[in-house]
Image 1 (cartoon, rainbow, N blue to C red):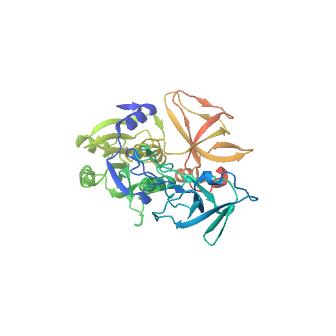
Image 2: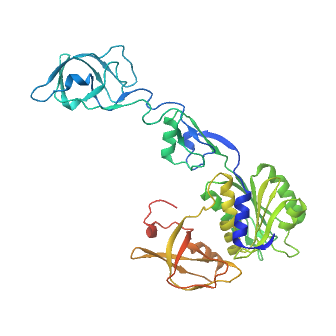
Image 3: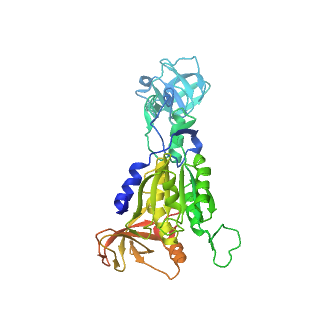
Length: 411
């Protein structure tokens, strides 16, 4: 498909890519990963009725009339600590001292908290009627219950829950390895001298940095503008890659080899060229079942095609929802213009005024500075000529803005 709408392209990406197979990871290393199936508790937690208090296990009817003026006297026959077990049994007029988390001894149906009793010479004076103070077996987690549902992105609190459910590992979708290939005779790998007529591989670094931001494993390489060189690089890296992203060579000049190489390799091309600005030359398809994104070489087009189409697809590989960039509502400060047959993306700055976010469209003479200094992106949908100043809009956040968002952690 050629020259399709952004919505069509997005649907083709999200409907085509499926998560990678399952792997088990140590539960304390599972944070940020997405569960590949329901996690079911293999145990009851707690595994027995236990005390919620430090106190005394009793027969509750013994203390029915207990008060500070008329204490009930009980014989202390032993002690039960958390993690231990006693063969002693509580009977009327008897009590066993228990610590918080201790198994409730046989015969007891309540625990009297320490603050309502005095102990002396194996005698306990009880000054209050008993509260229950017992956490019943399986109250926190029942054996066989689903503790974390499939397709949940795990947080630290989930990790503790999974451990409490009796699991040392969590079933999650495999993390993808993304190979990023920059093409062009003028492209110089980062760290090497940039001679006249050459440019550093900034697109390559930006894509890799976005992958690193989302904890996506990746590798990078720079390949000359040659059909043979690019084909060799693809054949070498595809077996160890879950996705390949190329940067440059996506248009239709005699030196734009990327899409033609994949055509010659027999990929299942889903689309090439999308009615978006910037980023029109983007292509997407599958080669031997693995997602391939060919991105244009101009920095604005490269980054926008990556953020709007490639990144959502890559994140789907590890089971994440495709809407990867956080969004906030804002008010548009100045009018923006679009095209009726085009989806336009505009970058700009955010500020907060009287508790309301305000988005200011911004274009600088430097393409790279426009990209690096922007706070967010707005969308002017296909079919929309103008969005007037003062309109309410959604902004995709691409910057770390704690001073604006009142957040203490990165997005």
